Length: 192
Image (cartoon, rainbow, N blue to C red):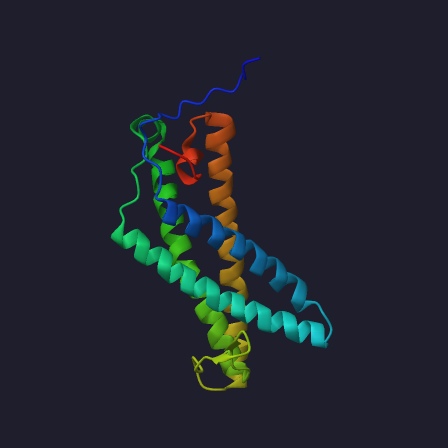
């Protein structure tokens, strides 16, 4: 029996490269994971578990920073496929603006959130030792007052990042389930 779901995804439409696809999904999963752990760990009482989670959170933040740098480098050296003509023409101007603005803001926050977290950790006097073996230099000098000033910015930018990621996911789902234009297929592994 044939499916009622039809997609107007043009088989000739270019997909993102496999490297871009892998970086996209790995970074997306890492962001959701680190955000969930960040929310959970802040309400824990002081304990070995809380200390372990804070260290894991820092390691994950450094990993996200490295992944973000790799993703940006890949993006700068490998032009992403343009929006398919049919989809681009069907989108109102505000959606084009939102599409580009959201992507630029996400890239900025990929770097801001972990860098602010690193600065907060350094100012608090808790250096980051990645995986317990690689000590990172302090990003800023130890200063408890500075740490208290930085802390809300780490939280605010993390919530902004997860909010924009949610908006990005909502737009992808709109294209998939409402517009049924198959746009999401460009970011899924497969053959052209």
